[in-house]
Length: 195
Image (cartoon, rainbow, N blue to C red; front, side, top):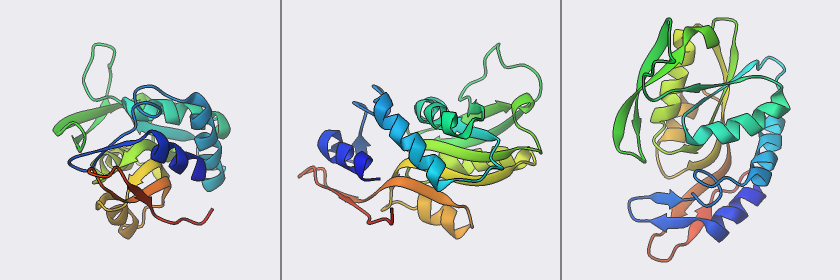
């Protein structure tokens, strides 16, 4: 998606340790107009009428998932990273290691909101090592539901996550795939994709 690539080039900051800082428009301050275009593109990439639920993980995936959901006309469920008094009843739980935060989370979804009849599109802001997406897939499979695909805003193509998921037969569509980035020059190279 050219619009997203242009925005990453203009406002993204490459930091040491393969970190791409996009908090000015994606995962701290959110550009809703950009999210709207991303939502339209995700709907184009996933035209299936079977999709009846979108699943993401708190917090950065929620905004993108909610905007995209208006094009699918389905609810969004987000996996919580911590137990709270508001979470009651039976739950699906899996463990996820965060690349960005360098810690392991137990992520939780109430069994009320994910079941065997669901056809789920997973949406997240980043795909690096694939741990978050793999954990979300685990939650969907534990529910007996079907993963219809994974929609990602930015994939770090030089890390293993996307390749690993695709090799397992998971349909992954990323709106921008970063092929390489240099923290000294700030240069970001994108993988060419068919539009």
